[in-house]
View 1 (cartoon, one colour):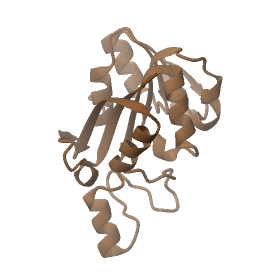
View 2 (cartoon, helix red, strand yellow; view 1 turned 45 degrees about the vertical axis):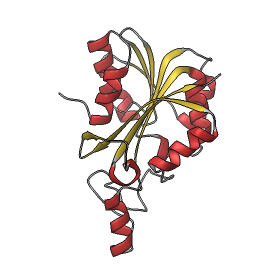
View 3 (cartoon, helix red, strand yellow; view 1 turned 120 degrees about the horizontal axis):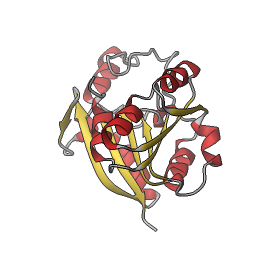
View 4 (cartoon, helix red, strand yellow; view 1 turned 180 degrees about the vertical axis):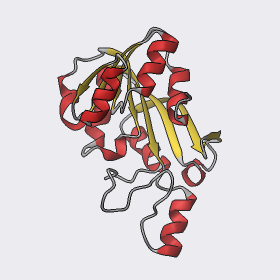
Length: 197
């Protein structure tokens, strides 16, 4: 089984044998790939009890918890990588969550849907309503997305906080695209971050 495209990018760039914390790990798909393919010591934090049970059934070390509350309990630099895939936009305090990622992990991967993609813009312009798409399938009132981040928003956010961007990948229709025009043409973004101090 192949990984979701953003998870595939992350898996390709995690060092073999690394200690990894996957926050919002879902059913553990990425953790299992890192464990089996790269011999990583992968741990997970997941809010949904059903996903926790599915990950544990795969033999993974996953605890139920909430990134907004529970990341403060992890010690500094306890992991080589902290991963937050498709979860940043659902956090109540994404700035605090990002601070914890960079405190807990020596590096952090963050992936998110780009709410400035041209299809989203067009839907708002012509239809006047929040878009419902394959990649953003929930309606405005039942979506877990509470912060509508764009590629340019995130670039400015990390720049203002003095966070180093070690790598950035942009996806459109599940395939990598260029950084040029990513704010309008990428459906998803993946960033590899580290502290500058």
